[in-house]
Image (cartoon, rainbow, N blue to C red; front, side, top):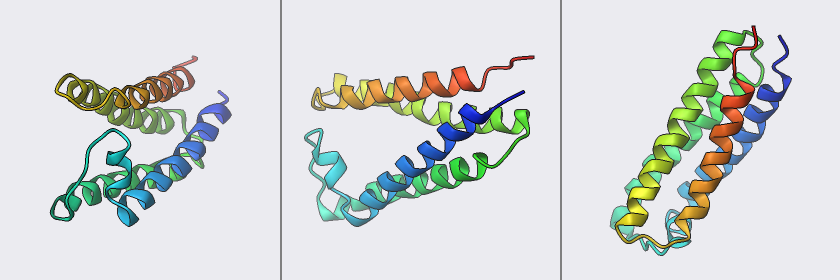
Length: 125
């Protein structure tokens, strides 16, 4: 069973989530401002907690990119799917409650990444 595509996706995912974590830690209001949300400095903790989750996903992704065991790779992929799918659903909920339409671009990105993880982690036995 060849999982090179999934391992490559995990590496790319690791870099993207690491970058998001760094941005959230260094400039906590930057990402939320792209969808019209302005955080007061007293609310930066929310961005810092999300940055921590992004760093955790980056670590999981980088580590998973070196794993060859199919079951372990699927578990890692489905953990990423759970994160992105639940985040996408919550972003749609936020949009329905007044967040800028720009958030839907992020939802589309999450659908794409979720689809890629599902496709590349399917059981091919």
